[in-house]
Length: 269
Ligand code: ADP
Image (cartoon, rainbow, N blue to C red):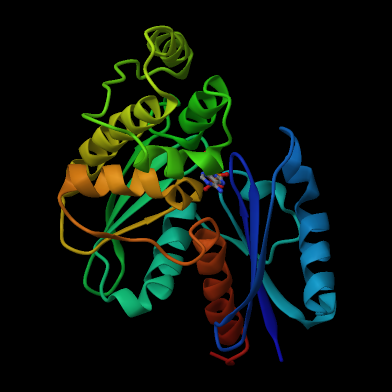
């Protein structure tokens, strides 16, 4: 069996997906610790292959993507994360049907990508100027509330009443706003839901820049947060599809492109 690797070097984590020649996902790994984490991409790939019992020689093609993709010198090819995200999303959403809009929230940016009927990218909008509406904003809020990011979803659903409004769009100002709300005896749950709705409003604005269509899909680490998903669905007025492994779909897409590139290069054309 031939194997293919997609290596997504994001701003917060490295995500690696291994697929087989039939484009089926065989395994994935997420690693991210420290600001120089990208140095360990090759090591992360080695660890994943070892876990999967696949030898390095059986990996025919490696495609790097993500903001640090040029740092992965061992790649056979590298592609933009917009393209990789679109390819991975279309494949991961097979059972959902056609997707027309991708929302991706990463560690330090958020994107809305519009697709045509064939799954090609027709337009995209990106917020990468500040932490608002990104994973970093969620990380900072969770830290101020002394909870883990993985707890945010559950806390959201235990909120009571109308979600609080969080007006600061800057993570630094949001910190003092959150401390103020805690000082006014607001519960952690109500603050968390306020944070989710404030991000959801920003995301909906981003989606409107590329056009709101039926068939919305959401990935990136924050898509693991069911509370944020709920807030975005309520703000956009549509059910959103979340893939099984939302953090690795961009690396999945890079690996899929690797199969096509490899087959093309070996087809004698
Ligand atoms: P990037 O591609 O930019 O490195 P990711 O798509 O990996 O970013 O997303 C990273 C963000 O995902 C983190 O900042 C964090 O807020 C969020 N995240 C990661 N794991 C979880 C989890 N288990 N539950 C909720 N949010 C998570």
